Image (cartoon, rainbow, N blue to C red; front, side):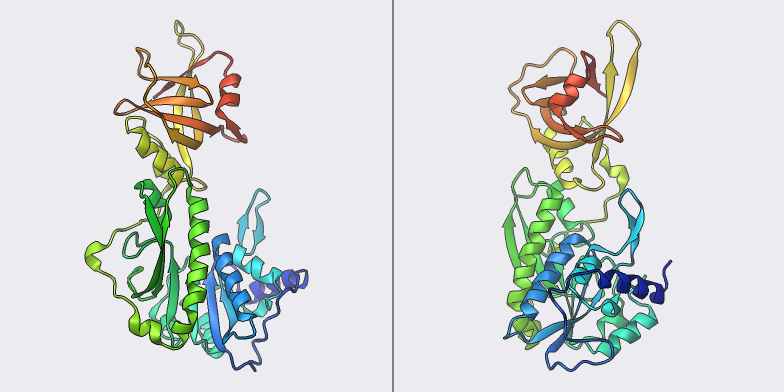
Length: 367
């Protein structure tokens, strides 16, 4: 656990070494600007895209607002060195020269000390983008213009923690991003605007997530004037609850692939779970068909495509073949999943060809 004072000292140390390509005009002690006060909440790298758009828009001569504070997740241990590091959004803000004492990192958004600091800033609007913390009513009651969220789905579709992953898992051909007011119910607020995006059948979740937040940033900047003058709230579209679909949080247990399922289902799962938690499979490595020298090998499946179904199957439907550039896994419904990249535990990602060559004649079977 980190105290507020510890965190602020930590951020100040980092800020001293950061660049100063932008220096917001506000501080905790004096706010002299007549521009509207906006507070941004976000944590992962995709959120930094939104913050960058807000910084750039606020720096324009005609801008009517400024980012007066940033709220993000507390520092955590990341990377191989397990060093305590600020969230990607906090680090980005520090690198841009944002005052360290205006970066708030509460464990929970309902902490009274944090809420008191937020009230003192008198924000007129709050913007959230993958903040990762539940906002209580006490928070939502502070900004008079409300809190607006960038959600990477076409609401009311895919409400919840994993909208991009669940959409890819379902094999959607189209998704998008929504700009909506935040209410206490999960992703249920009135929608200000939506932007539709076609989904390529090879795109993976991290790339689609980045694309949607990039589009969401443009949508936000476009709609900010109407949010500030109040017309966005008047014209916001209530969501049709009869069309709601949910996008629950992904668990690590879901990462295993079962080759009883059809190849398309497995391919979509690989795309959806790319990055975290990834997808895994257990295969049987056979030295000699006539012996009992068999080993079970765990593979992380990185990149796949659906097979063309024009290959002649061997008698054993569990045999994994190598054809051209892919490991061909037989799947349910007489379909084939072509695996292009794999990763062994503790090793780097490698091509299917390199992995196959490393087997030195050993055979593979699905379990």
